[in-house]
Length: 450
Image (cartoon, rainbow, N blue to C red; front, side, top):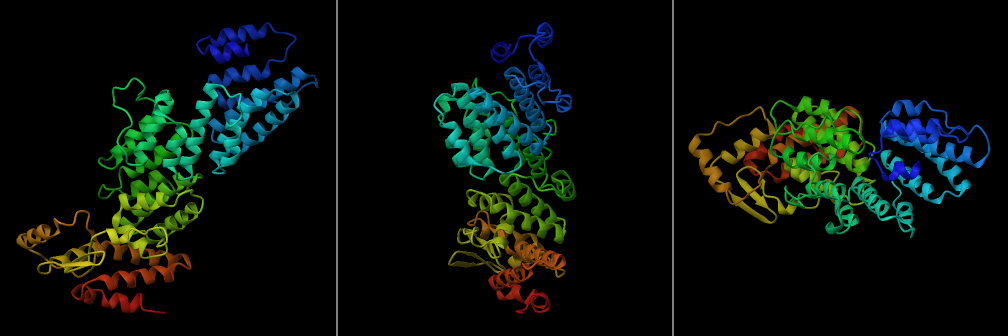
């Protein structure tokens, strides 16, 4: 029955149950729960009693399988701690019975459960994958599991290497590879008409949505179920509305108030939530998002994952963070052209701009109460002068962010308030004198040296 169940997925499940009814002298509870897992009746599986009725080997084997199925059901219902409890019991019974292959399979599920709670153990997973008798099918599945673990540690490059050569891909490997390419801002790994591309697979849908989220609004992924897909779906849906005027509240509602467990998802969630809160002038929420980000970064394998995502999402926030408490990680400031008033600075270079238009844009970016009306011709001359600086960052926006983050830290009573005040002073020091004079009162009243 087990062999048939594993190797012929098309076999009718109802017929399997009928055949199980004929086995009167053998415990069948665990196998029946396997059928319920295939039917996705997870809630029903959780109600099962897994403990053995007797002490003979068949009863213990059945109990081991029942515990394993309850663990898998708990995983699918996003109850990883319950899953770990039952998988631990299943593995203990399996070891006592000497069912080595089944223990191997349950250990991989154990690692899936640990990944769900953000408690990743790569050395243990690597040791499990080094066992010489893994089937090719199990090996490929384990490679995908390891790649997912590396991604959740903020190391998509390592995850891509873990998947191995593309020539060995099946449809699931190909879909996961596409998502990793999207997160790394690489071109698609395969052409759209490649026979391995299945647009319906969750990873492929996430890859397409992530690429689209940067250009268009309203990506819809709410129908995706299961980990890690649901988490990424929510995050990418929120990202797709970040650049839509007036949608910041909606972005915050989509992302929700609770940080995801795994580090990579927590980083994306924190960055997008901070950007939306800053746009909506929710100072406390923006500051709290960056506090969450700081915590998530400590669990990452490579912190550069954070800096890259912030730079691509909101360069003005990158500048603020690079001059603030995140300066050790955000180290690429010298490569960014900054509009600082009547000049653009890029590293050691400073290029003077015509007229008063630069100052007007800085004030506009800071949403300062003082406004400067500029003519169409003045704006045209400025745009012509800025043509040589693609991706120029308006430091007025960075000043506004520093002001909000300082205010949020003060409201929270957080010790980073002094660091954000220092960030504001640093940004002010980069302005040309004509722009500095406008912000002099703010500097003196709120950000003077303590």
